Length: 371
Image 1: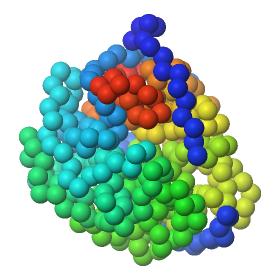
Image 2: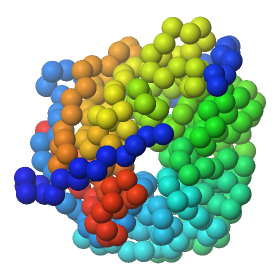
Image 3: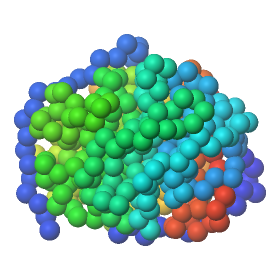
């Protein structure tokens, strides 16, 4: 993309302490068959970026079909779901999600995840706001249209902001979901609340076996987690919006407490798990994350940039973060690895949201080539 691209300069403003909860839990370690990725100085970085699809209005979630032929993309405020071909040449609406509502802020139709066994069961999952709160729902997608809406999990509190919303299947075959604390910080420390958590569930909407508290909760102490991705070792990484001080990149382990509202960023409070990397909120406000070729790529909203953070296959260390496309394309929302080993990313903007202030239809999806 050339340097004449309009820069979006608007910046979003991001708006008691609870007792620490110390939990002891046997660690679930997902099994994966992928070979370890060992980062080196020669690892790839973004080398080229080009527009692959235009005319979007707040494209919030992107998830690839298992065969890599196309991806499903959600639009947050009008609840539409689209099929986009791998080369971006074909964009077709496949339906809307029933009972979805907005919150006048960050709620609406958010995450999407395609069942790994879609070829046999045709299931697709959505997280969305509804009349009573946020929900995780399942629909049938036959490759052409959506049907057969079923709410799997209700009762996730909603608010204008801090709704979380990302979905992803883990290498264990279970569905993971991020939930915000709905602007009620103490919920993040309540292990019996669905808010301020990462949840882990079966495809039929039940708590996954082996969850640390015998409910849906996988980890707690989150403010507004919006990005999750698994690396080739099966480790779960999460990006989280802080309040006024620090945004976080966390390595998620079952039963661990990630601090909010007792801690924002790194702290020395007993029982809290510190982030692997932090940023000031003006340079991040993270949303989606993806793992490609030994690094985490993290999209930034207020920071209007794409962060690359090297990770190590042999230990839990992360390397020096480097920013790309600073201010070039505005608010970056979803970043998704293109399947098939192509070393490419899809990267979407949400400049048409309340904080970006651009007109409907102004958002884009880019393809980033690594090299």
